[in-house]
Length: 291
Ligand code: GLN
Image (cartoon, rainbow, N blue to C red; front, top):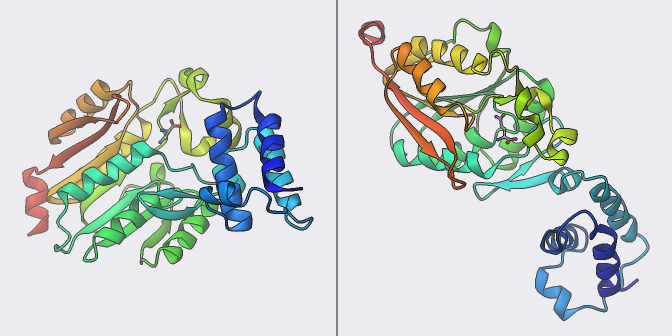
């Protein structure tokens, strides 16, 4: 079958599920992946023959798209902060909101300084790896409870040619980190059960619930734990950066203030939702301990 015929068949097969612009984007991704074509090639080579050894790839992708499997999982990769990342169903697909968190961190941390950084709940490793690309003098650690996610994160560090120290651990059962950090970052699970109805079907059915959900009763479970660890393990004037639940900005700030964090700044994402927090911890204890 020739390319332009296949494209119209592909569009027709998906038109009941996705808007046309999204279908076009899927098709561009697939031709790039399977026949190394650019968008412009659709115009330049519409009569290109899709051979019988290539067609099964398109067929499988089409079937997966019909089941609303995210295109990133079908291709096994995505892009985050301009860098390539492998993803599979053991890792969340990195979100643009998290790119904004990375941007904020990079605006604050000097690339010339020797900075000790840790990312808690790293998933695909998108946060520490993007930071490492821009902070050559930083030493960066990343934790996750999921061995499977860490396997992907380690591959991503290799793919992006950066060194990250990955650690498999359950943060909820961790009371002590091995050293102090200048920057602690986390984008932990924060979606409440009661918010499930807002979550798109393709997210709900395909992305790891371990990385997404918390109970309605204790939605700040991870934030409480991370704040306690940060209070103990941040260097004087160290910074804590958090991605947060858009509905829990006030509660998260209150909890951080009660634990002694200062200069608490809340920032909205590009959708206008309360999405991230930066704060300091500089009590006398931590200054004493660092002497
Ligand atoms: N922002 C993600 C979502 O909307 C949730 C990420 C998280 O729970 N840390 O699905």
